[in-house]
Image (cartoon, rainbow, N blue to C red; front, side, top):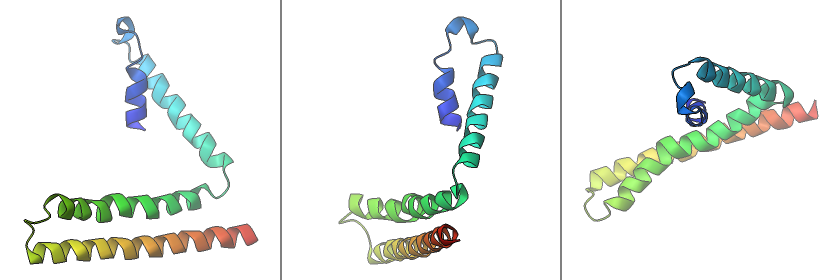
Length: 112
């Protein structure tokens, strides 16, 4: 939420920058709006776990070694390539288990 708050704070006129009341108000409204969304959407936690299992593993375990291998295509040693492939495989397996778990819980809650 901090990047959103910082972007909104940039819209404050320069004559009001010294007053912290605007920054506090923006951050408070963002937290309240997040609370309202979280309480109004059924299974919000399960949807967030589904998104997290897909995107977190993609961004943290799959893309970095894939980009590393892509950028340094001919300069990577066999050990580095093997380790990158192992990290990618762990990311894919973890993402698959997390996605399956989240989807099964969502289906279970929809049936009951």
